[in-house]
Length: 347
Ligand SMILES: [Fe+2]
Image (cartoon, rainbow, N blue to C red; front, side, top):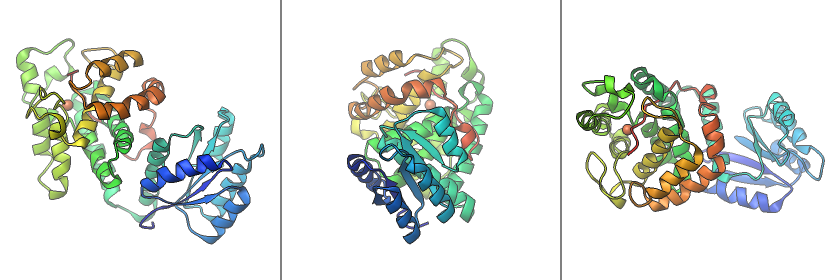
């Protein structure tokens, strides 16, 4: 794979092309533009691309299908993502059958597209080149998640979802791609410390914890950071894990860090993992609805959470929250990784 993955972006709407090209360039992609099927096929004949993102309908004709066919024939290694304003299910099914990696409905959220492309490229790297750092993250994530899930089956999928949401939110907050890759590991392993608590029974207890149990469970961020290992490459990952229950107002744990004293990835992780804990059923509570979750975050602005991070997260939640909450395990079967982690009680 090239140092900067090359993406061919095809659409007859210039405004869409410019917006997406700008966003993908910030994601470290090298973007080439085409405004018709003909110019796209020419580009595919001239240079290698890691992915092709193309509109389906050009002036009423479905040239996207031609671009998909040409991509499969000329550059079978490239992941093809189709975009369209026509949300017909049959079209989507047809696209996937035709070999597309995925199918997005317009208007396209550049953050979602960027995350999808990053994932597609990681998966293709695994297919071609054997193990690289990203693959090791996948494998270790699966092992850690499966271990944690064994002691708290209520939290199936929590780590995987936290990882996915974290990546989207961190991207919106301006966190660079390399840091986000490490943050994925922290997201998966954020509750790893729970398996080292002396008493595991109360993790699946119905109803509230006793003061003593709550005190005991507060050890898990630091325990997780310590037990994950001392490798120098993991230093920041361990820091973010240790920070995931710190609060913006300084009343969190274990170190009562406050404000910008908590790292940005730690603040992102804190927001996202609370969201998933609220949005899914736990031993001590039912899943909350989207509006209740949104109201909760507003009440916790500048208390539990960084207001700037919330300003990035709440629009994401308004746009995608219903879908995420309706199908929380959507991505699990599509991943190489195994399972996930538990979440904390509501702060
Ligand atoms: Fe936690």
